[in-house]
View: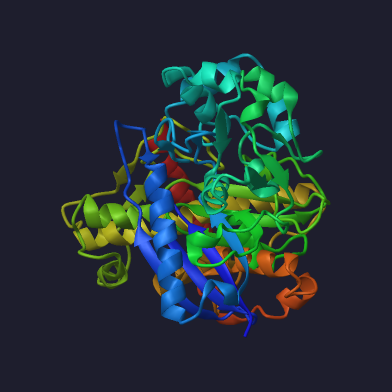
Length: 496
């Protein structure tokens, strides 16, 4: 048998999955990743815990599968994007905790860039809107606020990386300092047209080029794991940021195909092929995972708080003991009773881009129960995703393309049938859940298999995709429009 190994390093957990060549899961292992909240708006991870939990799951899954590292043809990596790590090239020690993609501390630097008139240049080169979400101003903050960091960087002593780069550095024991185009495109320092770090943007943020990793296509030779890491060298053949990896794992290879991942946040991507399409509706243009030097693009909308709202119900309100109970609680009432929740815990992402917004619950009456709030929390995930798809459809129509005709879904929350049905009702198009919902890890495995010759091309990969269930709209478009108007009203109350 041929096996592929996928390391899936996410915001709230690290996991590793062994796949066979049909894309079937053989074994998986997962560990929770502790979150660090030093102050409001600050979100950090310990880079050594990122590596430690990822390594532990990789070793565990090989034991579970009953195979050795020598039986793994290739390894793929997918990761939480934008999260920023800087470490010493000699010692390998991080200079500070990782600044997580949700972290907002660099917002003042972003406000200054906007005020200085750099927004158009940055969007034209990177496809991104200026926001603290991305790595550039996080990296700038670390250089300016960690004692001695800037001087060390200018001497060439430090390395920057997103989580993928950090994991490869550890897996190869410092032999490779690399990333792929999809992760690089999320830094706000990468020219997605030339697939190169942009000297003008590096200079604008005063970031030495010596910090930056080598950038390769998503299916490439990223090196080999050191023999003692997993028991034998394994070729590292695939790498992509989690959302681009999920797009690849969903076999969305053609322009107009779209997927939504329901994880800690929600991330809706529509493939646009070789066409760099600038959004006029608050979306981002990003590099899609690519198997060659030919740039591939996607439109993306990001919801900062998706499944995390269920964690808040569990850990904050203590309304449930574990996340799996939320559907039963929400289904104990026929609807939300007029309650609307806008979970802007760390601001609102696309298509609103309101970094200072904070969460609200509106429509509460004396008859409101915790079940209504739980249902409103679940529905908020679908409302935010529907707002993204509406924006995406407006962009598609403006570009002379057809709007999205079906939405492929994945991520932990997509197993919630109530949520998926409500999503289909809001969108008015089929919502399709695949047989394998671990499409983020699957995409990394497919990329690794593509680079190592397990798969001949993306057509072969597309033939492996299978649907588990199609959720068809059951309510009128008029009712869906009425619900979206209520959502828009709740957002206006939140941002007023």
